[in-house]
Length: 102
Image 1: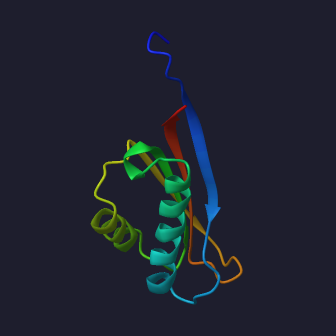
Image 2 (image 1 turned 90 degrees about the horizontal axis):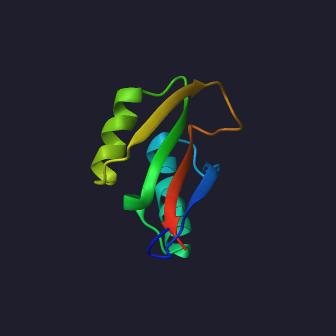
C-alpha cells in the first residue's frame, strides 16, 4: 500500500435481542448494539460492506427492508436475507462486515 494505510475486515456477528418479544422492540436494540460496536473501532455504518439478516419466517421481509432503509441512510453494497424458524424468541439476527483502516 503506497499510503501506508491498511484496511482490514471487521465482522460483527450474531447481533440479536432476546430481552424483547417483538421485532418492533428488537430492531432498534439490535441497530443500537451494532452502531456501538462499530463506534468502538472508530467505524460507522458508512464502513459496512455487507449486512446479513436472519429474519423469523413469520416476519415481513418488505417491512424489514423499509425499516432498515429508514433507519440507516447509508447504502450498503451487499445485503442478504434468510428466513429462519423459531430461535429462542429471536425475531431478527444481524451480522455486518465493515472495512476499517488500521
